[in-house]
Amino acid sequence: MTGRKETFTSVAPGAVKIYTCGPTVYDFAHVGNFRAYLFEDLLKRFLLFMGYHVTHIMNITDIDDKTIRGANARGVSLAEYTRDYIDSFFADLKTLNIAPADRYPRATEHIPEMVAIVKGLIQKGFAYEKDGSYYFSIAKFPSYGRLSKINREELQPGRRVDLDEYEKESVHDFALWKAKKEGEPFWETEIGPGRPGWHIECSAMSSKYLGETFDIHCGGVDNIFPHHENEIAQSEAFTGKKFVNYWLHCHHLIRDGEKMSKSRGNTITIPEILKAKNNPAALRFLLLSTHYRKTLNFTFEALDQAETALNRINEFAGEVKYGEFPEGEIQAVGQIIKEAEKKFRDGLSDDLNISVAVTALFNLIKKVNVAIARGDFRSQDAQKADRFMSSINQVLGVTSPRKSVTVRVDPLSAKFSVPPQRVIVTDEITAQQKGKIERRQKARAEKDFALADKIRRELLEDGIVLEDTKDGVRWKIVPVSKKQE
Ligand SMILES: [Zn+2]
Image (cartoon, rainbow, N blue to C red; front, side, top):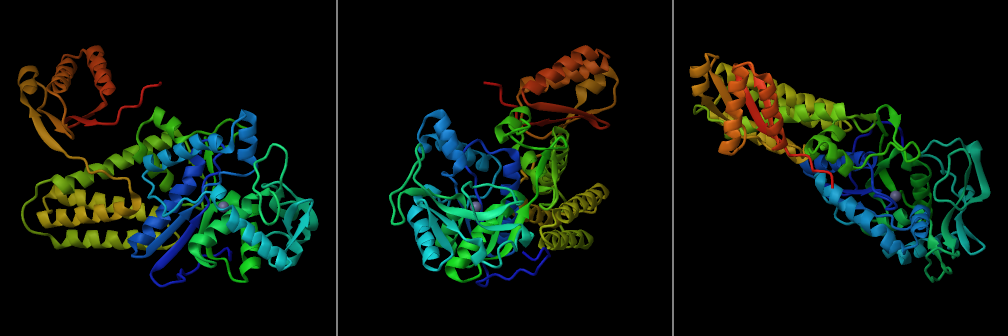
């Protein structure tokens, strides 16, 4: 609201109430929508990490202009039309390891609560009726436009708009309740037959579950106008109290440098991305690691880079979790971990500065790896590092420590006079697969690169990635991409 960073103080000490605008289930949510849900997840997990009790409500908009249009075009009921989109939304939340909200209220199940607010607004003189519909009179609410910083000269009070979405250029009185119309679902209510406008839905559901004044309201920047502006007007006019203390909005996601939109045909869903590269944790890491107030450019190259970075984190997490080190501890290592902890916390405390937090993590990995290589690392240091890794993963939700075992493949070096080859085992594989790796090593030693390449590709189909390093061949198991149905 102020356009500045502010110190956060919750309404009730130690507890935070958050409302995040959920999906409008007229289509499959795309990766841009999930960028917003992931930023909200980071915020929530960080507040939990800082010891707050968090109550999180995310609504499902299962009735609005777009869902009605879609259902009519397909010739099915609204409930039937939205069902698949709701199911896939929940499936994607799970895939991306987004911590569930406390509730996911649906608009169609809160019609009486919406009607009560419209009635109250009529009684207080903020709303008026026209042809069975009810509109909010923006002229009656002098602070209208504060969130979106609207030029007040552009206000056109008295003129009405029936659509849920409209441009900032012509600000009108907006529809709270839309009169019954041919081909639209409707409810018989005290204010007549009809259905809610989109904005009243969030005012009704947020106050029902979080109270009239709550701490944080989130959404994408597209929600600022008109949606959140109208929520503020309705709620504050109705209760006479401040609606929300802090507003946080996530910036756009663009794809290959272009705005992602249905009309450009460049939207992409979570399952579509995972069909091309089945690594949900890497996708989560990519979407989290750009600050929420910056535009994020989604490319598959960026996803590859996120995967590489994540592999490094997982290998490190595996090393400190499963590695064997001499008894004892080394003070300098404890200091490195302490510093990283502080930087991680301070970074995220500063308006969720994820770059600072992730840099703190990679600096720790670098410094500790040097300590390990020098032999300046002990079992108690490993325990501390392991605790650090799992505690920050409560916030990031991306790591799964990878077990590493080193195996010497001696026969090869003996037979083919190549340097001792090591196979660094990161997961269990079958004897047959191990045999293939050895045959490939042999082929390489004999300079039969065609055969070596063929075997490498076969192993890749099993989800085994080979990396030739100066210490020998290293392999790891990656999730195999789902075959096209
Ligand atoms: Zn909303």
